[in-house]
Length: 380
Length: 157
Image 1 (cartoon, rainbow over the protein chains, first blue to last red):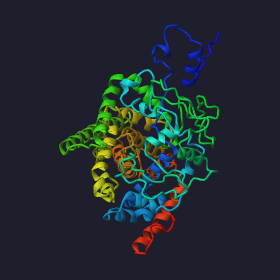
Image 2: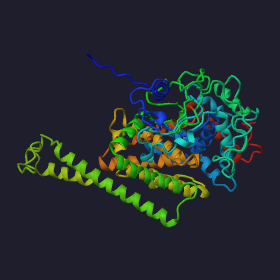
Image 3: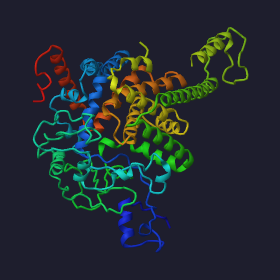
Image 4: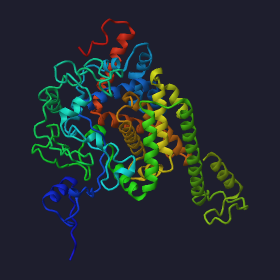
């Protein structure tokens, strides 16, 4: 008899286990066990309004990189980059002018409905952390975002970031909404963020609810006892134009990539990479712990407190060392590959001196070929 | 001009108050790219199917999002693209040193383009909107440069 495997999502698994305990009657979520299916989910809690606000500031980075992009476009022959360089190249000089803030750069982008870019694939306003239910605490990288994601009330998420005045009808740019000096928000958003969103705008539906502090109708009921910091409000449908909120108000099924709960486009990386990463963390728990702790510690130190000069130099030296080491290993591997796949021009047969005679593929090389080989090794 | 990190870095116009953060982001990215315990992930990503420019651009954009998340969103968003560009050039340079012509010049350009528009798309700005914003920016910058009053609010008002 062929065994049929049934894969159920974490939300389905939990729903079933709460009503019909399967397996160990003395185990499961009620007993504090977190043995749900492994899922690879990416991102932090970010509302649609936050995503749009961050997106504008992110785009202002084009002004800082404008000249460099122009150079890359010129050298590689990439017309798009050349055009970006031409359009944004002036931004760098402007950004360096005294008192020229990031907010002013975003102002200069003009009136653009950035939030509309989230329509259709923005999914829920909130996303969840990278979590493997079985090993999230040890992983370092995985799961450390989870506590931030707890809670499914969109309005409360927005309020924690200090975004105010959303939906008041002002410009979408809302002035200096990326002022880093604003203490209320990690993004410094003290003024209007998504005021321009119209009622017909799918993202506006969510943002207007945020403005009034209401919970989005039908938003997922997230249990406060959720121990892994997951949130189930994410419907994440690629065609959902209602802001991705599950209309049933229950755990929103994800219609996206299997294993992904939520599809906040702004914070979701390539699922295949994260699935690989989740698998890798399982296969290499010790390395994962080291890498996770290393990067977590590094990031913890980097923002916002920063490193001392000595620490920065140490980190730079370490990065340079790793890079050099990896380069050498890569070169060795490439050279080994070259040696075994060397093709010699069969027309060069006049010279009978065969070099690398022990290599069956190099039988007619002679001095010329060996010189070529040596040259290729030097330039590799 | 050669496409290497030094040349590209020198072309970045990072404001002085953000230079420290910028260097730290690049360092964090390099650590992720070259740390022995994580580089296997990168190798797997690059060994997957698809053209190298798409894989490289997508991979770097994913990494930048991960770093942004790891910083609890405290990383200045305006530095994500510049740092991503430098890290992409760094990675391409490294790959080409390991095995010549792994990432041809043309692929570096298209990988950079892919990375930028992937990042913008993930943050809610599709390509056509981004191009429109850049045109607006250019017009406003020209007006500012010419000293026209009220240039900043010309299109936003």
